[in-house]
Length: 310
Length: 192
Image (cartoon, rainbow over all chains, first blue to last red; front, side, top):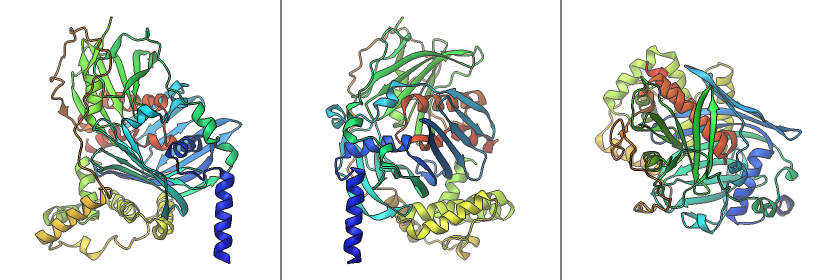
């Protein structure tokens, strides 16, 4: 009897939360809403297969009167990232603090957009209920597999009640795990109203069109499915730079162009930055940096093909 | 901490480090308290991530994390500080091979597929003016450069661009996606 009651309670909770579906698109939409709109704090661990690097971090996310305050702190060193509605501030040992003004990017409202085009490049598996728990919470598993070598996929363990991502594995096209992240403890202030209904969330998603006149550079070669969605000129600490964002709807690559210092070392290289990769080069006295959580071949193709158009 | 030391610690936790390297690492651990603390953290993290079933480990891990935050030594995990870690281990070649296979197995999802050929479709409008002049290595064969080998100003620029990228491109997992910010600097400073 107790088990029947437990099952009934679980089903009721699922129904009231409105997530009794195995549609991965709806779960991913809810996940995006959950990470932004729920109040939570917890600790997660991560490990990179490439470098063997491991770490654990504390995260705190609060939404007060519609304004977000977040803090990420690495356990064991002084690395700290704070984000609010105005800026992102980063501090870490051995480096100058970084402050980046919050930019209301149209992409933030657009991701993740799961449409027919995205299905050409990723395979979405049906959502399955796991018989295991993460951070002592019941989870559903979603797997998004890339169909080529120019993007990564994900295996996600989402909290059954709130769709919060409690564990994730970044995977390449050969199903190798690039990086794993897992919450070990998490406290979620559950408020179903904080997470938008799937239909409403889905309707709001559409990739933005950039101002095609903006910026003097363009990538001449892109992996299939990627297109320009943001082109803007900014001033960062008095240094003018152009910033372009290319995306396939799920993976994103930023390309930065700025005038190189006269004595700058003309490096051309691909480097691993944890789960992200970066390509740097110098063209016509400008430093080009392409960065994103994509395979090295992707940042290289996009960054290396950047050309002045005027 | 350097990539090499990271890899060695990770391999040590996974019992995949060679006998000679293990001996050197143990000697270094004996005189380096920070490294011992890092090893303790790695062992706990490895336990959690390897298990794929964090429930039994979560209480212990939570206590370990809280104690680490408080500046105390992390609690001993069952795999941590085993006597085999503190002496030179007679690792047979077969055992090493088996361990390597186990590590590879842990890093591969079940039901893995064969790698696919790259799709090199170029559906972007080409705007190349053909006049761009490269000042360094041909872009077809860029060097693979560990980020900690960059000059400090390049490392600083990479960190800043990574933050700008995340702030603009959106983040599926929220602030968790910022975990790589500072990665370059931390790697480089440790090496210097």
